[in-house]
Length: 340
Ligand code: 5MM
Image 1 (cartoon, protein in one colour):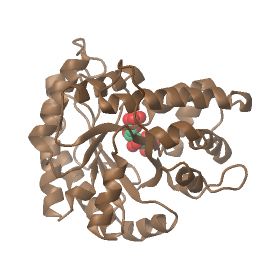
Image 2 (tube, rainbow, N blue to C red):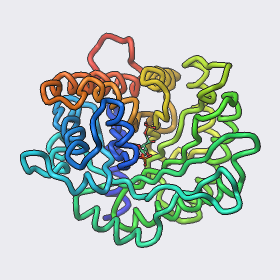
Image 3 (tube, helix red, strand yellow):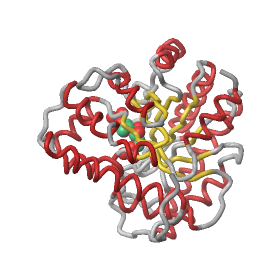
Image 4 (cartoon, helix red, strand yellow):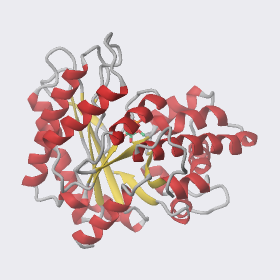
């Protein structure tokens, strides 16, 4: 695959009025998600939950540009035997894959972690490509607390993200790079801005050094927000201004799109903040969503594991997807229909 082909895929992933569904929850996270609705997490229940979303034809085809899958899911079939990847493709959406294998403690840096999964990554990604993936994703988290994060944690995670991105492009996949500054803590929004800017700046130095073609990547960052237990809250306008300003300081304009994670914000907070960013006017990159929780928690609760609730859960998913699609255009509250 040429870089031009990869750049075309990256551009489709952030097409106007569309965004990404992160359905790459690991089994541990799926236990929490399904635990919320009293359903045991098994291969079949995880499949049923994802099949419900992927078969929601209208929101999938209109608003969801791509779906991030987990290793188990990219190999799974729907109840009628159709591969889940085929359902996604039939809806006109692009399948992708989580490439990292999670975090490990960073030795000698208490409370900090580094994302692993580089060993054998090229072979794994080539297999995922043969299974239908056209993009990959690697998430590397840092925490704010006291004097954390250390530069060592930022450097280690930025370096691994760049190594991954180069390997992904070499294997014919568009890398989503996900440097996440976690929301946990009581820090001020300006501390999140500072840490996010340092992390993003290091990340782009590493990506350039690794000769990654930035036009064939998508960035998936956190929004710049106050800590989850901070006493001083921030309006959507403040989050929008500080997020876009931070990105402008660190993210080259050759990157085609920024698809935010929701990171534990309430689903409407994530949506209205994205909308506020797009209402600021043109940015150097498309600003859209790559949400998990802010897209799926509402439909999950409606479904509650019951077959008779599938249609209602798909409507709840359609509503969340449409609102986020509008937010990606900055047209929430505007009456004309969102572009398909
Ligand atoms: C779906 O959640 C992904 C991570 O799952 P694990 O923690 O189980 O590995 C995560 O990478 C996700 O893609 C992003 O964080 C976006 O999800 P949110 O919920 O933050 O929008």
